[in-house]
Length: 187
Image (cartoon, rainbow, N blue to C red; front, side):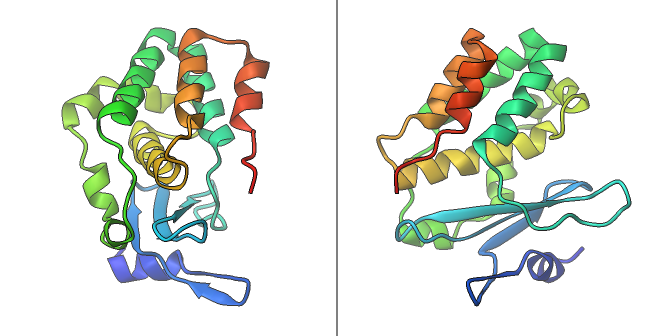
């Protein structure tokens, strides 16, 4: 699929306004992910994706939530606890070393294929986790980076992503983890 076809597939209407993506990427044969200008601040991003359904059609455009990736990590952890905890360590490393708040100019030039340009060794190391849950490792890494960017940009002192990673790593009870994943920020 060409980039213009992907952008068209990921264009939607919200509150009477046509929303076209800033950047779009076909992560693999099953996921297309796009970012848009958000409304929470000048550099805010809105993240959306489509997933290929079992019938071969693309899903409606979806907004990923923390609960989605959290449940996926829990499923992976049930199958491969040690490897999943190493993956969580990788996400914590990304949070601490790579993710900084964006400016509006940086947001407008953000290219998803650059964010997904992740070292092949790391992707290979966690490849086994793609067998479990809904999301593969490439999609999870890109989604995690985008959610981290979104949080660091909109809530520079925010700790939701980091708190969830810590709770998952420490093996907190499932209710505590899911409660944290579904917390809503005051608007």
